[in-house]
Length: 337
Ligand SMILES: [Ca+2]
Image (tube, rainbow, N blue to C red):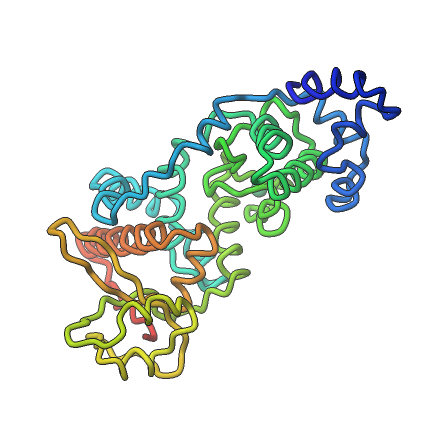
């Protein structure tokens, strides 16, 4: 462990009368242990097995590319991802419908999340989660608070699920399974949806589906409500000021400023106005409603939320087409705007 090696000689030189643990106990292990309801010895055991990985620091500090929407879109809205989504739907239709019923989250939204996160379980990450959370929680001061807590949550989760640290792999940030849950979300929102006694988001599709839907419900998803609507801003006043209001904007304010939407949105609700860079150098404006906000609770990027929404719409369209070809009557999906 790199940090131990670095700090120990300094502590010795200064003649500090403290143990190695307390010299490097930053973040404080006692605090972390009581936060995650584990023993300090559990944390120490995890620290002993954790390996610092420079690649993880490199990944998190890589300057964010800040892609414009039209470039970002090309990564996620592809024919192969849409058709894999349709396949995933038909393979798991029963459980997706069950989740729609239980949590109010449409099947295509759950499919789109799993599609954007891991291409339906194909790319769940190759880093040991223990190493990822140790590297970021104990060697990356900028995000130490967040990642050291996730480290402790992971220790608690490993204990609960009776895992070995070696078997659990994830993203460089320690996100796990088909829906890429961080340990805190895994502890709070992941569920054993097929009731086999294990919460397994890695290979248990039912658990992954139920858990994503449960996360959405827990983060305010409203059944049957609208998500996202493009709008027309010609002759609009104070466009930037409206964008800057973020989620403090209301439909009434939007319409008063001269912006229009094709579908009339229910007044008084909070919305957010977004500007997306398009390929022809113009800007596309759109509003997100409460359910768009919920997608942003999964990942805070508006680009991410729009990609999930669009992918879900394409998947839904192709599901309907395939059903119609099979002679199934498809109900129109109406959403409350
Ligand atoms: Ca299960």
